[in-house]
Length: 159
Image (cartoon, rainbow, N blue to C red):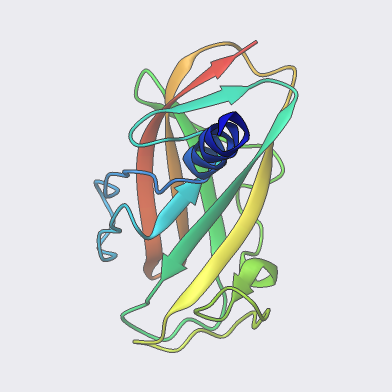
């Protein structure tokens, strides 16, 4: 009986690490607001991410663009005291290598067709040089004309 209880607790803990994440729409974006079942970030249960320096976090996001996108560029920033700071190595890079089919199984890349569902999967490093600070993470994917998807979430970088 104890073994079964331990397995159930272990399973619940693992599910908690990959639970859906409550996110907010980006204030200046016209992209459709994403629901909590459409974004999953490791170590971000519900509404605040705890990111440890010298670690890596993964993100999965469902995208259903309202228009065609030939290319997608990453707009990934940390906002500290209302000042946006680009995440080095991620801001301005192509998101196309991280686009999968709706099930998240087959890499499809770009272009994206309006009304079709895609899965974006990526990971990002929390570098040891990042300060321990509370911030807002801004994660947008789009082009010069606007976003295919965008969200923001409060986070804290810890040592």
